[in-house]
Image 1 (cartoon, helix red, strand yellow):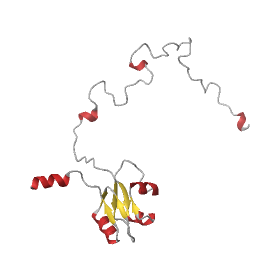
Image 2 (cartoon, one colour; image 1 turned 30 degrees about the horizontal axis):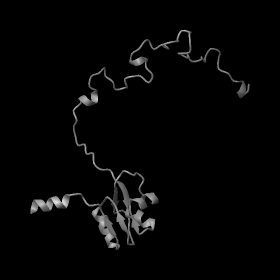
Image 3 (cartoon, helix red, strand yellow; image 1 turned 120 degrees about the vertical axis):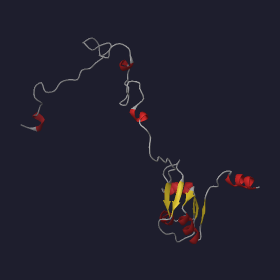
Image 4 (cartoon, helix red, strand yellow; image 1 turned 180 degrees about the vertical axis):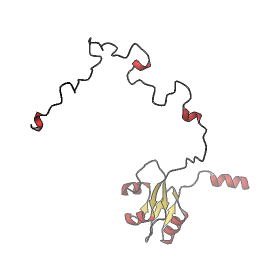
Length: 157
């Protein structure tokens, strides 16, 4: 016996039922009955449907700490050292591949060493990272918070 001569046992394989293909027992409504949600294509209630009542997850009490904070793209000092560029803004970081997600803010962290002066435009930076960049002769430029200085001056005066 050879591989190309192998065949399944008689009666062990069956053709699938092709519904909705004319008279033959499963024509017209194709075994779905008449009208209603389950007769439509793509129909179904979903795995969490509970007959119209509130789902279990919405009925359970919510407890604990749920901090939905800002998620940052992280850039380390060692990454800045490897780029070889003097001015690093959002576009430069994307070109070098250090930042991939376009909508996420960028944060500079102090992991690694920086031995040359660079100017870095980021959305946030750790205090240690700012100190390390300034110690190397560079500077970190953060965006200004809108309206925070003016409001404080008006309240004080």
